[in-house]
Image 1 (tube, one colour):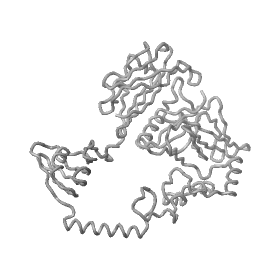
Image 2 (cartoon, helix red, strand yellow):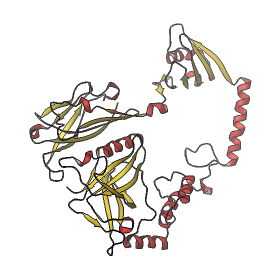
Image 3 (cartoon, helix red, strand yellow):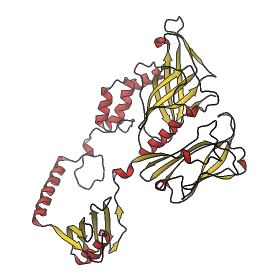
Image 4 (cartoon, helix red, strand yellow):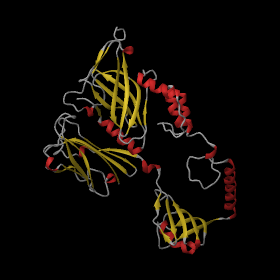
Length: 453
């Protein structure tokens, strides 16, 4: 077996980070003298079989959904020589801490590392090519004393000799000038400084970026001091207006409406005059609203809040027609949760004797990611692998949908036949697997999909 294998914990981490829009952090790389146990899927590894030592990460770059991490092993830190037969790339999980993200089996291409006092010195450079999905931000904890290759050295020297100061550059981890300064304070080489400098310079204030009006919609441009004075004066006037009754305080009551502030406002709207109001809404529970009415009530808006409401509501009228009210989202609505429904997998079609199957749900707000990885058996062409109710009500799709997944035959990972199969996620919380005429050939399935609930 050759090639980098992403672990199950690595796949779960990708789903978590995509759902919560967080960055992927590679913490270290290491080598060992062991290998994956006979018959054991490398994707199930949680650490090296026989750890020997950490390597020195020298570089990382990503392209599309793949990242390449390069790390080094040399004889300087080796007391006794050994043969490298396995390597691992570790990453930071926000819930579990450091995990084994990817595993590389080197038994077909072992590397011998001599001891530091040997006449022969050994320098090995190992490259991980691994999947990172659609994650945009990737951070790697590099070693400041990693060696640089001749090719990289000449390339960086050329960059140093001909630096380009482009303030439109981007670098992971730099989201403002203070973040750039923090990077400068940490240990870094001069080549990294030039790359980061491009990203940091875009946050430096330019005269032409100063806004001297109240009409700009830009979120990143600074306000001129003179315009700040105008806003301060208007705030002072607003406070004065409040004291003089510019804002009117009223009570809205409708004996035919109980605990429905939206309908109460609609019913009472025609009998109040144009203006801005702070309204107390009674009958049943109490609510408060800020009302803005103009054009003899043809146009206006209202913001409603109160202890019976979970979230703040917004409603507005346009040319005499009320549009549907909207519920404003809060931070708690976007919390990320993970549910393991592996025990719901249908046992009559799941073979757990030689392969550790799993099914995970990750939810952030109203976005759900479903992951299924399993060894299947006794398929008929259309089979239920998650029964009705397996997916909780809070995580179910509103409309059934079908998506293509990866089906594999019985063989080594790289030589196995792949078959086009599909999963259908139903409104009742069940999932069916369609293999068609290939039902006798499909042995493994791996699937990930994201949908809105």
